[in-house]
Image 1 (cartoon, rainbow, N blue to C red):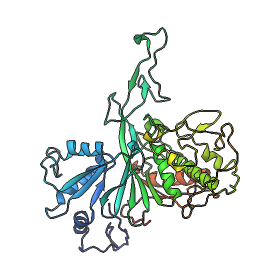
Image 2: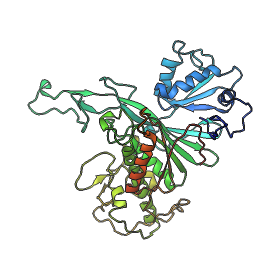
Image 3: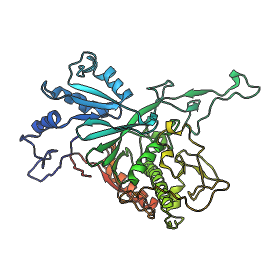
Length: 434
């Protein structure tokens, strides 16, 4: 929660607080000051211990005179903290609910994927507002419904290939059907955090698995990328914080709800494809000639199929290709009531319906282009975006620096994908300004 510069020398031991204007001499005293006076709230992506332990233990340092700490998250996360942690058994009930002490206050965020129409932000602390989206963090080994998650039906508990509905075949009785079981999907979340003064935003993921591996139906990440692409096109998305728990050698069957560099690039290619679609729309609106794409560059991005559909004729894109932005589905709920998705060819261009003109559409009241947007420049769709890698799992092996390995993997894969974004490995005590 803090953003402080770390500077070390031979005569100066490491401290997360060096370079900051803090009132005390020792790191522990300044740490208490930061927690009590400067940190106003926490956004919790999911209630796994490695994501909540620091918050829980540090609440012992709250003084009665301190203002309440805001604990924000999706309702299932808050309910888990309330029921299993701050329950006067595992830890004192320090909240202001159920006759607690009142040091903490819960703020249940709206699930953006379930909102029809405009998705609102919720103020967390002065000057910062948050919007929350659910993501998938792997699945449980037990066959039960878990925290309200939707899951795919998997045959005989084996690895997921495609989800199959239970169908009644002619002449087959109930005992003749294949044995299916429902596996639960563990929920995590991500947050769009907005500076209310500048309206700049960052996107921070909790633990998350790739859509290509997830058994969640529908896939979740693609809707977040739709929304992020719109923000990037408007020039308000400054950075993405996303995990890469392992390097590229980790196999898909051992991801446990996490990402590797291969999957990070895979997900960013989906984002890039959405950004390119926004640029295409804007080019059509202003009747600008578009630069011809080369086969080894943008076509590979536009061919991204986030749903894993194998279609030799084309791919389905969750963004409807109409020019009106109001038709862009930003969540699974938004898909209800929309016309059938337009089929895009492998070149990424929408096929015209019968009688449709090949000339670009003209709009009498078309708004001005987004600041800094160049509808013609499609060579590096994520140019200017900083991607900060978090949640690296140490393998405790002297022979391999897993952080350096992940970084090298990402640089190599990005060069092949030609996305244009830059990568940075998060450091304890580091500072980032956007």
